[in-house]
Picture 1 (cartoon, rainbow, N blue to C red):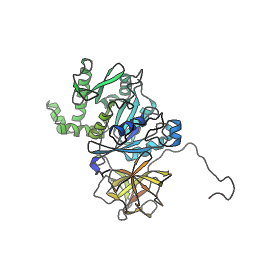
Picture 2 (tube, one colour):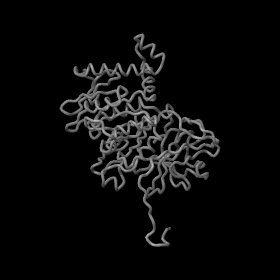
Picture 3 (cartoon, rainbow, N blue to C red):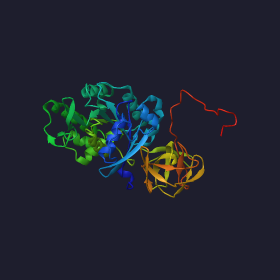
Picture 4 (tube, rainbow, N blue to C red):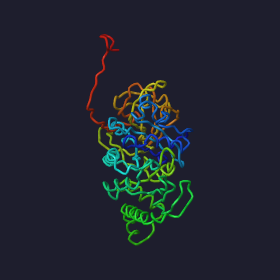
Length: 411
């Protein structure tokens, strides 16, 4: 695995209601990018992201899981997040370190509670979102009803960028709203179906207005009836997405990989890189500041998850925010004020670890066998006196104490 620089990284969390297919979509994304050579299934207990014995037996995600893939000369880090509200803290941790989220919802014809909560969490935390309507191939699926239910609640901020062509209950193609061209699922260009032409034109006009609203020059071009250049369209789309004014929507089917490559293309094209995103709240030398992703600053990172692996031992999942971290580097835990060393640096894909020589600002990885470091800690170069704002996890509603069966056996 080669080392990727900040502008070539996309960090995305898969969030939404339980049972909507987030883990299946993560599997499909990894398989479509040839990051894995076998398409696992949640029901068979063979998926890459659900590897814990409890997850396999219950067929649900319990912990957030990491994966990564390469697509169009970019690295996409995926965080698969549990959908059950019992594990809400996992979504909180994930949204703290990503620059975008894919909200996975089923084509049930309704707006599920989990989809609503996921959208509102993204809006509250300022994380750009893209909605993927999954399971369009299922019997009694209703894409139109799902789209209408979502837009009824959230209005014109949610607009399809790809409209599925559905025949016999299956997606046979799609219309790209941005280019107003239609394709089969195999990529062959076709005519836009007559029954979709008016809808696509309306959605295209809405997106053009959103692009114009992001910049005064673009607004002038819009009123003068001039076409936007491809670069102006991309810049305007990114501005609308970052400004919380636009949530793109598309559809597909994870288990059959239908439109999954399209989703990867959209993540690369439309979702922000770490350099595009707002800064993290932190204190430097005791002063509250906002720290943007910057590879030229001294190294700093934050731990957002800690686990114990039966072979490697304690693993700390980190998001590098500034500088870079190389194997063998020494640094300081600024929270505990203790020195540590990067003895081994990993990329994580489910339960597998791949060693890597260095991580640049914006990337996600893991450190093993740190002595003093745990979740929420800031680690940084000794010369960089920074402490990041801690992740605000939900307050637990139930507590449980564990004690020794016999007095004297506490150790």
